[in-house]
Image (tube, rainbow, N blue to C red; front, top):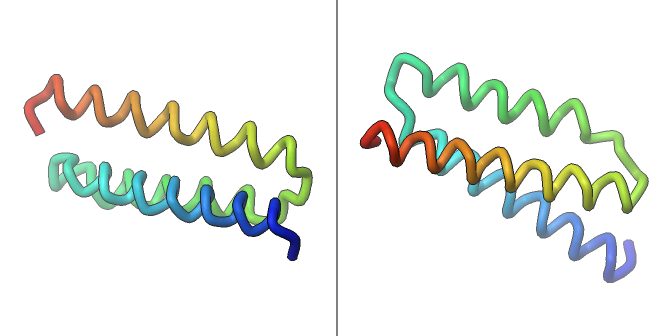
Length: 77
């Protein structure tokens, strides 16, 4: 594993933790489903080895989490 792989791995883990923390703010009835969706997305992309694709997926993931965070803020959670 070179430095770039290490940095990408750290960014993926940061995204995963951030997404799960944001999901904890969701209402109880949708929290479990949201956490399962996050885990499923991570598992679906686990085999990806293309660094450019990984960077794209990370940026898309952070955008989705940002939108979820904003939506939860608007709903008062």
